[in-house]
Length: 220
Length: 220
DNA sequence: TCATGCTTGATTCTATCAAATCCGTCAGGT
DNA sequence: ACCTGACGGATTTGATAGAATCAAGCATGA
Image (tube, rainbow over all chains, first blue to last red; front, side, top):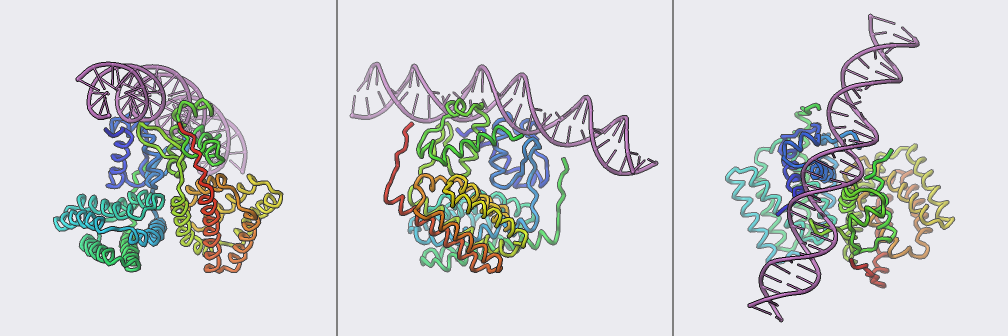
């Protein structure tokens, strides 16, 4: 069985990512404790974990709030991810086996199914699994942790600013191209594809962020 | 006043970095609670924070241990830091003002004094302040956090594997060259210097790690 | 020799208490 | 009359102590 701390962390992360707890919302221990049905201690731990992921901002004795992201933060975040990607993808190419590729394709098949069916949440879940499996192949746990920690932040941005038209279709195509480059063991091509994909996503989000500021922060 | 959590986190980090708690040592909350004079809750929080920094490894219901680093982990860690450095240093050059440079030189003067006096701890403290001030200038909090989080790990390696001969002197020279490049607003030179410095440090540590395995893990 | 159940030890969670911050109010000064 | 500053109550966080839960180790029996 999973611990209450992990469970409440996942629940809270989901609430933030999906926007039920919008940016700027005050996160009081008592309220969340009652809402999620656990005591204060695991909830506090969850808040610290999510603080490490950049989802919440906490100050001593002053409580925690859902982090508000300025356009500049979006740029910074994606540039960080791009830099780490530039490091990791060549390592993935170096380590990936044919069996690994089969696993990746199986996950990607799930992603394609969900994408074509228009099942957003399922597609996001499969996409995350795809990227997680991919990054694990780099055999660099510390660097992979950076990517994993910032994943929720990226998901939150996508949820908040919406998906561009044809975003999922382009993502499907991106995965196919990446898998082809991996099968060819073409590190340069694979890296270029991943970085380009990241940059495209950033441009997408920045355009929407600058178009509609949407800072409807629920004051606390 | 600082919270007990912050205090115990700093103490515990220091104990691990300086080797009083060697790699592989079991970290029981009861023992540490008695040793550091605080209750279990803030200690638990400290362990989670240090887990996020990569200093300790914890599993649910199975306790925490000081992380053991293989040579490959050292390589991975430094390559991550190098990649992030390649992203951040140009931003530092872009944002650094003459006043900032004066502040950096003041900190560096402290570092030089300590280095020439052979005061290792003071030099390390000043060196950390120098790097922290430098990275803050990049205006990329998420990326800077990656560097800050992994700092303790790097310090632990240095303490554990010892400082190479003339390491401090070379560090002094490295700082001077970097400051010159910053004054000239030469992003390429500054980046090359920082990355080269990081790579040198990695080579230094790897050589020592491979020469003397030194995995004297105190079993628990 | 291997599987199984108990025992021990630790971790994790709940509930309670103390300390710090925030907000509304009020006095004093310009 | 308005603004600035400080004081006090209320709320929230942070810490402590104690109970419940879970994992590992060892003896026992087949």
